[in-house]
Image (cartoon, rainbow, N blue to C red; front, top):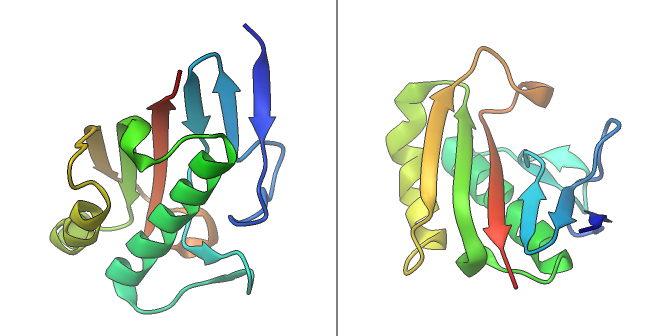
Length: 127
């Protein structure tokens, strides 16, 4: 099984020595996606809901570049700056995972890159 690096200009470019995702056989592991608009290369404003939406759009773009979609996701990890934002994040998250509800973890962290409010990573399986 060969690992293949995934890169798309439809999601923020890596700011360090990592890939946007790695495809390993049938599995795709995304890097954590922060709410950076890839066209403007800036963090989106508008609170945790806007940032959740942008992060999920970035996850979606990376998965599509790997030949998968959100319906192929089996596990999601959500990193929140403040767990008090969980309900607002969850509202937007539910818009993206309607039929397929992958396993999920959500944790509060001390700090995220670029001081954003949310970062989201996913694992998908696509045969």
